[in-house]
Length: 248
Image 1 (cartoon, one colour):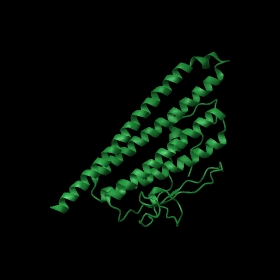
Image 2 (cartoon, one colour):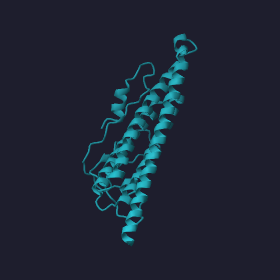
Image 3 (cartoon, one colour):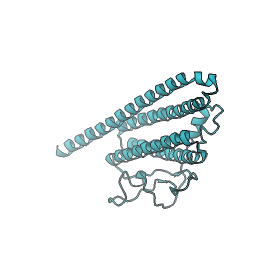
Image 4 (tube, helix red, strand yellow):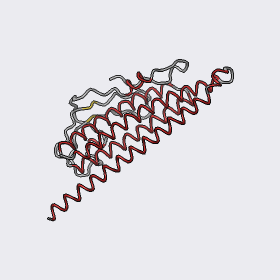
């Protein structure tokens, strides 16, 4: 698995967005069976914390890493996601847990990038890029498997929302990478501006580009939250229909 190479290590050179995204979107090898593990990732426990009465579902094996070590951890091996026996409610709970993990990964990605722009320490940022790439791959694989399992449960409406969620997240990731590239260019221009008029002249447009990209990402986040709300509504309606059928 190729991890995301740092987007801003070569401060004086341009970086091709398509290449950066290809690296970001690299996925772990599919259908590789892994042995027992001690991960607390939500997809192992069907969206529940360990020990809440549900047998562990061995669907993935995220690698562990010492928090004090800046070396990148290996990408998790995404194995066949066997969700046999999980009902629609459990699948949606699992989806929500994996989405929370995704939000946390974005937070880690942003924190590492912001720190890099301030401290210019590429080693820590490189390690975080590798870890976040692995996390995104793992989460995306799990959520795709949830969509397939929902279809198998005849919950096609909810599954369609999950597919929509994945499309929005793909667009958000692309926009996030583009924003980081633009912020890198802005940082370079700010550093050069005192002695380089050409660099100074780009500051206004780069600030505007950053603002536009941030607004676009905010819009995508709003759409993502709307889709998650729709999924919850669909689940509530389905539970209500099942209760009516049972009472009838």
